[in-house]
Length: 279
Ligand code: ATR
Image 1 (tube, protein in one colour):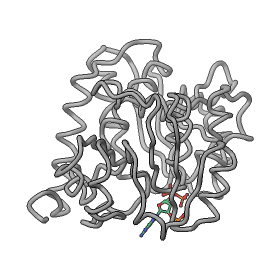
Image 2 (tube, helix red, strand yellow):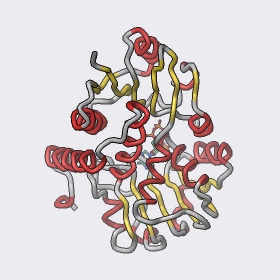
Image 3 (cartoon, protein in one colour):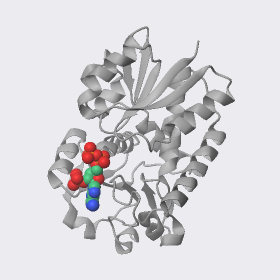
Image 4 (cartoon, helix red, strand yellow):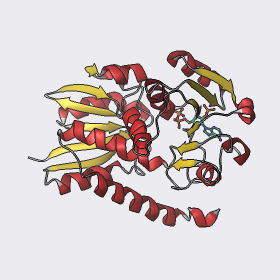
């Protein structure tokens, strides 16, 4: 019998997870399929019951459910609890357990470039859903100092308190400096805008953008003149690799998944008329 997996979120039609997971299932000859399920905010309770009733083996969880799903699960892994967000749910005989692989995805993305956070000053932009796993990962990797900037200061302050890091007002970005800067806001998604200027990026050595559409965001375009850069697909790929391991207890074909992701993003850039040629 085929095992069914999927992603729950809203919006979800843009998700690249079906591309990645279905390819890996096919490559490994597994009898499994992965679909995209649009679940509105107010439908989450029913959706979670549905996972059990339909015997869905596992799901990826995305906006806006990563935080609100926690109390609906039977069990939540320690790390996901600490982060306060779940991006993976596994159904084991009707018991749903939540995990978080986003933070591992971020660390792998840096690790594969030989970059460590130890004793570095790290600036994180944004205090939304994506930011939590990033702060957790960077803190766990022993950064010397973590500074959080968010347009809405109260949100940065709240997150900073939760994780024991520093929050500064958006206006102070002009004075931001450090070794690594990680962009987690949604600004730059499908638009050629950057939350920070080149002047600011000049003061960093490494810059990562979590946004991957376009692949080379305005932020990365400005950063690459001065910094080593990492695009958003790196984290997406590696969180997906870890997620696949939880889904199947097998190692996925990482290089093939990577290739498929980049091809799909290139295709979407063309479709939307985005990308480097627009800069
Ligand atoms: P959520 O809305 O659930 O927080 P998110 O997409 O993870 O989901 O969060 C969006 C992040 O991008 C937030 O940090 C947001 O800043 P605010 O907290 O001030 O809303 C940030 N963001 C979105 N648009 C932005 C913009 N134009 N300039 C700066 N930051 C922006």
